[in-house]
Image 1 (cartoon, one colour):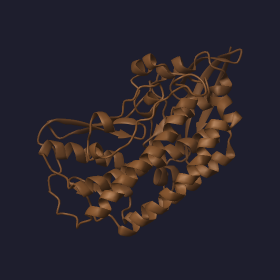
Image 2 (cartoon, one colour):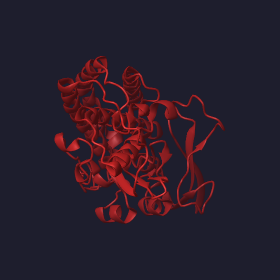
Image 3 (cartoon, helix red, strand yellow):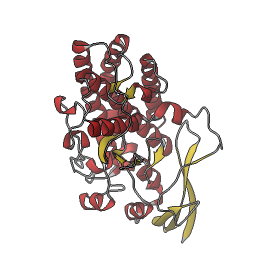
Length: 356
């Protein structure tokens, strides 16, 4: 039996996840945290003690989902009515964040598995989206969302630029579809690899695309009907085992690509409503705390993000998660050559935090 120290890398980032696997005859026996074998979760580490210009932290993820779920909690507790046009604007921001996160998923997967063109294409699209974000006059972008709606008017020039990008990307997404559907390397590395059955998904407490890839169509945007999602038409993609088994690494990639397409559908509809109902942003309430305990949730890029506010006003966020014991069940018996694909396909670094 061999004990191997390995690293999952996150491109254009100072962050890595170090872990240890026990291998016998090329098959994985167990996996644990390299830094702390008793730790329930794998934790990212940085090559720098103080990261100031980290591309990953600055450009890939923001706290817009946390701002959104926190604002929803305060609004629900205080019965604050958000103007519909501002609700649509918040949806545009969070759906773009979902697209960026899913594109980074493909960049990370391509970087660790070895598909250079997919890696460069993903980051090219991320850079284009980041340029669009600059049009919102808000740094960071998460400051655009506040209790009661949005902080300033939705820029008209942003609407025009986003519509242009959507038209361009509707053609470019065919490249991503071609990779996952026809690239023999990608299919060989992902189909029937790291399969998570519907029963195991429930046991592991998964949510988001990892859950839906196993064939379960659960999405907080549909089940919870928060914000203005009830008035938008979009589908919830699920894994179908088109190239292998339902819930494998290929399905997790397939679902995220389909979700990018659905996010653009949502954004297009929301922009249409904003264009029809553009108005001056109303003065916001000064209420910034809940007057009673409240729990609310949103569908973040990594899955269900929960905000809990207790009677004292203390705020707790519950991130999507997957612990090491669950990972052991997923990777045990798999070839060591498949470990990078499995971990990358689980999107374990989401919303700036490792979900493992």
